[in-house]
Structure formats: C-alpha cells, structure tokens
Image 1 (cartoon, helix red, strand yellow):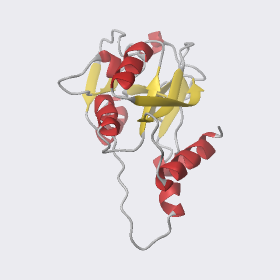
Image 2 (cartoon, rainbow, N blue to C red):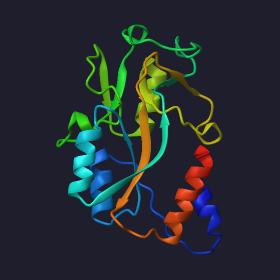
Image 3 (cartoon, rainbow, N blue to C red):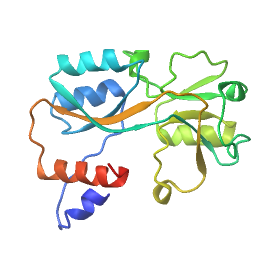
Length: 194
C-alpha cells in the first residue's frame, strides 16, 4: 500500500499475487512478476536454492525470524507466552494447498514434514482464517503481521522451538529493478526495520 501511495498518480496498474511457492518462482522466472517473496529454512534451503539457480533467480535476504503459531484470538492457547507442539496436538493444523505438483519443500508452513493428527488444507487466506476461527485451527507464520490492516482477531504466539525462517525476495539474476520495484523493496525494508 505504501508503494502505491508513493506513486500518487491518476492512472496506474499494479499487480499483487498471493500464490503457491512454485508459482512465485515461475512468475519471477517468466517475468510475469518482478519480485517474489519466499522464506528459506534449514529444511527447504538446499532444494529451493537449486531451483532458483536453475531458473537464473537470486534470493535476497531481508530478515531472520523465529516461528510463530498463528491462531484466532479466542483460541484456548492464544494468551500463552509460548506454545509447544504437544499443546497443539488436539487442534487442526491448517496448511496451504500447493497443487498437484506439490512438494513438501514448497510448503508455506515451516513444519510441513511433521505428522499431525488433524490437517486441513486450504487454497486461500480467507478460508484459512475462517477455519482458524470456526475450528480453533492454527498455522505457522513469521510473526510479521500488520495489525492495522489485518485487525486484532488473530494472534501470533512463539512456538517453543529454535527454528528460523529467513524471509527474503527473489529477482531474476542481475536484473535491474524498476522504479516501482525499488520503492517496494525500500518500503519493505522500512517496515521490517532492516
């Protein structure tokens, strides 16, 4: 939003896509998108890095962060200081569907290889938020949440684990970003204080 506001013109066309991890990579590789946002972890780093290299893409580090449990504010665990995996066992784990060509390396959730007794896959954020509220479901996130935009109906509580998510963006190798792309990255860094 801050990027769009900076280009205070009467006419413009921006495109923002929230999509599956392989599509983020393909969109940047095919020049449909100038920038794609991804995370790397100890689990997916080697595979994602190889795919980026094959597609002549570069990962640009923004921030490292811990992992949080994202849940509805009225969830029984929402007021916890930290949450353990054992405490989550009786609640459904919500994950984003990655499509027919899915690989657990592309999963948006950092603990995608863990075994969960209850799993519900969703294809969009709105459905996932409804499932959080209606079923006391949860998912994992970076903890970077804009409360002024997303409201205060949801909470992010640290998971009792040492895993790190490296958040960054991808571009085509040696590509010069457009003016809009540069402003977007600058605004992102300002928001993250990096």
